[in-house]
Every structure is written in structure tokens, then in C-alpha cells.
View 1 (cartoon, rainbow, N blue to C red):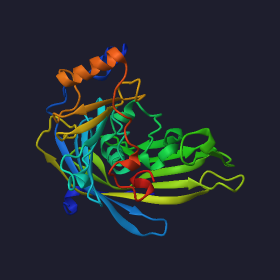
View 2 (tube, rainbow, N blue to C red):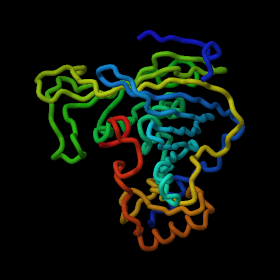
View 3 (cartoon, one colour):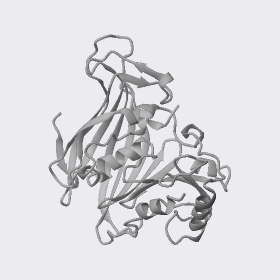
Length: 342
């Protein structure tokens, strides 16, 4: 595909192991990158059905400085989801804006995960990271699976093939995700797995930058698509691209500018929040520790309440909270494959 390149000035602005784990996960905490310029990028996402109908999905605002970022997605239904990274860990919060219009003391739901990839966000937030904030990630994670939420229960089983730009900050120009010869229908249980007759695997998704723009010394996508496919189940001896298009998520930049320096890129928390910390295991919840926050602050070293929670979990190796709700129980957009699980 031929790229259209423009300068942006030419367009309209628009438990016992717990303390060892903590020593690792908080290493480098403290915002070492102060002083780097902060770039603000605003844009939109729309969904395009296989028949060609395009529907507005979300408006996004991305703040970027080095390997730190924050992305806010305002969805078509009024919801606000915010993700971000301090360069070491990724943070996500559902602000529950629709629910708060009815019940003012509604809890926000959030998570903390190791690494820069926003694994708990929905697809638009993940694509913002991929399009604008992933350059540092691909310096060391060239074989990452990149499990986008759009691929749902199959995300962890897909491999990808990517091409990076040769211009700074060396962001992806194209990525293709491939599956093998099986597909999970509802869960990742073997009972839900279908075996298919592909000769050499199948194409599950494709990200491609369709136009680019320059801002200062950087090259950024101006428009980009994510095509999501589903395999064909009944035929035999099928080739890799014998798949059916499910939907296209199309991103476009409306404006880009430098803004005042930002120190903390983590999303702001409200006064009542439940946080699932996936960096810390728990006997009750499995691969995360559930933390109640009533002070509007993310868990971090030096926080007395957080330290008390960790000590209790270390001593009794349990947490009293129930597991986090399934995505479908959260107040998030769910009207399509790209907006959440059905």
C-alpha cells in the first residue's frame, strides 16, 4: 500500500515472595524522565462494517513523553476509559461515568500490570499505544504476541509479523497477526476449541498505517486501520488469507501539539476505586491482588494503606475481595467485537 505523507501544518488542527516481587515491580519508580517534551495527540476512531457502513466509536486524547503515555477514550455511549504508563507499569481505569450519573458514589474499576503494553484496556486504547507510544517497547519485544482485546479469547495464541518505520521514533507501519489451525469460540478451554483445515495458518488481523505526518523531528501515523478477521471453519485445504472480515477500526488524528510538561502519566483515580494489581499474586484471586482505594492514589511504595494490605496478604496469603467482574459486567461499550466481549 502506498503511504500519503504530509506535514501536519498543512492540515486543519483538529506472599513470601511478595517483597521480592515488589522490589522488581517498583524498580525504576519515580518518574526519571522529567524534562522531556510532552506531546498531545487528539483524534477519533470509527468502526466500519464489512458492508462499508462507518460509525463513530470514540474520541481519544493521547499524552506522550518518551516511553510514558496516557490515553483517554470518550466512547459513543458516554463512557470514559483511561490508560497510561510510567514507563515500567501500565495502569487502566474505567471512570464509570454513566453509572455515576445515577449513583454518585459508584466505584471506579482499575488495574495495574507490569510492562508498557495496555493489556487491560479495550482495543481503541491499545491501538493508541501501538500507533504512537510503542517505539521503546519494540526495541526489546520484537517477538511479542500483542494480544489485542479485539481478538478476545484467541488473543494470546496469535503470532505477529511487524514492520517498523525507519524514521524516529520508529513506530509500526504494519502488523499482521496469524493463527495456527485452531480457534477458541467462547473460552480458552479445550472443549471450546475448533480445529480447522488451513495449509499454513490463517490471517487473524492486520494493522496498517495509511498516511503519515511529521511533527518536529518525529514521524507519526495520520490515519491507520485495524482489520479483524475470522477463519472459515468448514472448508478444506484453505490458504492463509481465506478469511472473513469482521470489522475495521479506523483511527484518524485531528490535532497534534506540544503541551506543558506532565510528571505523572497514570490516570487520575476518584475517591472510591477497586484496583486489581496483576503484579502481585493472591491465594483467593489467583494472579492479582484486589486493593480498595479511598484516597484517590494508585498503590505505590510509601503508601501506608497499601503497605498494610500487602502485609495482611503476606501473613495470611489471602484477600477477602471477590474476583473482578467479567468485562461484560463493567459499564463499558460492548456493541461490537472491537468494543468488548459479548
